[in-house]
Structures are given as C-alpha cells and as structure tokens.
Image (cartoon, rainbow, N blue to C red; front, side):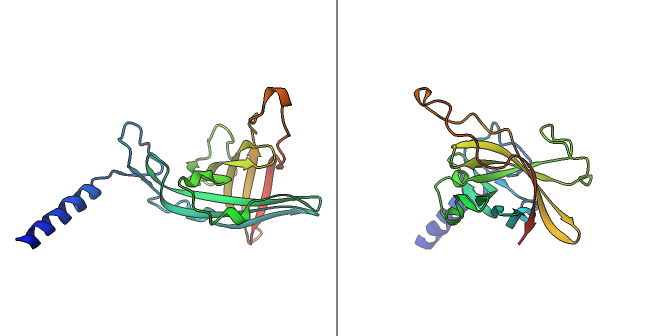
Length: 200
C-alpha cells in the first residue's frame, strides 16, 4: 500500500511538471502564467555559438557566444545565447569581460551580450537585402562596461570566401545612466556600424 501511495505521488508531481507550457522561441508567452518555457525547438540559436574576431591593424573585437538551455529569468524559462567580449583599440585593451562567460547568474541575461530574438530579412531596424529567403539573424543587446550604455547588436552568420564569418551591426547606443550633476558621462566606447568577425 505504501508503494502504491509513493507511485501515485510520483505520477502526480510528474504530471504537474509535464503541464508546464513549452513554446518555441518565436512565440509569445503573453498571458500565460509564470513558469512556461521558451524553447529553441529547431536549434536555430546553435549557428551563433562560437568565437569570432574582427581585426583591423591593432584594433580587435573578440566575441564569444554560448547557447544556454532552459534558463530561468525570474518569470519563465528560456533558451538563449549569452556572450562576453574583448575590445582592443589601437593596441590598448579597453574592455575584457571574457572571464565572465562561465559565471552562472540567477538571471543569465546579466551577461554583456544576450538574446533569443530571431529576426527575418524585413526587420525594420536593419533590413537585409543579401540574406536568404528564410534566413534568421539574432537581434541582441551589448553592454559597454566603460560607459554603462547598451546598444543594439544584430548578428548574421554567413560564409565569405569559404570562411565562416559573423556579420554584426552595433547601433543605437542608449543614453546611459548618469547623475545630472556629473554631466552626460563617457561616450559609448565600442565601435558602431557594421563589422565582419571571422570564426576562430
């Protein structure tokens, strides 16, 4: 009888867990109670994982991106890409957050790069005329640790001359948080515009 009760309890709680709604990352959880799961059902985020580097003389931008599965953000679970970066300008290292890549935060969206928002060719912020018909790009944010400002980061994985590359656009830096008495604070220190990073 005791084993029958134990089995009933296991089945009950197992059944409750199975009731958690699972949505594809392209869907919206608006209106659902907390605890649902935005899953990368078709593994579209996988293509963005890796180490990518832009080099122009002694200026280097290195980005490392990792896919995280079923991360809780305080409201729901989600699959997402997180990342950190190193920026060297004219031979001087301005920012290096790469050591934070393996830091496990209670909300992984604390990383300097984060997203699971895939966009198509007609994305209003940055349409893509050279993208393939069903190609997806990743629309993310990147945080500049010097100015404490965020900017939009649009990433496109492609191939150029047989080399895997990541074409990125960094645009629309935020105003940043500052005290009025201190003035507007430092400028956004990362390079703005389009860059091509080679997969390492």
